Length: 65
Image 1 (cartoon, helix red, strand yellow):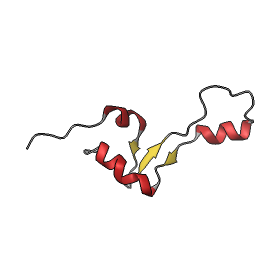
Image 2 (tube, one colour; image 1 turned 180 degrees about the vertical axis):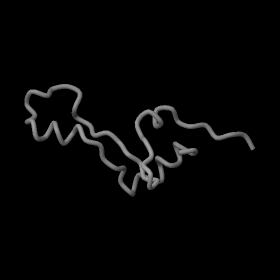
Image 3 (spheres, rainbow, N blue to C red; image 1 turned 120 degrees about the horizontal axis):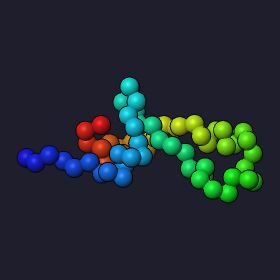
Image 4 (cartoon, rainbow, N blue to C red; image 1 turned 90 degrees about the vertical axis):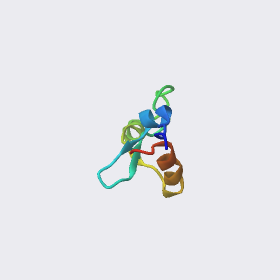
C-alpha cells in the first residue's frame, strides 16, 4: 500500500503536543488591530488546542503526526 499524503496546508497550521493533542493558532490577529484592546490581542496571540469535535478531521489530514 502506498504512503498516505499529508495535507500540506494542515501541516502548516497545526502542531502536535507531547500528549498527542493538536495545537492551533487563533484567528483575528492579522489586521484591523486598532479597535481591539491590548488584553484581547494578547489572548489572540497565545495558541489554543483543537476542539475534540474537530480532532478526528485534523488527525485524518495529518496521518503521520
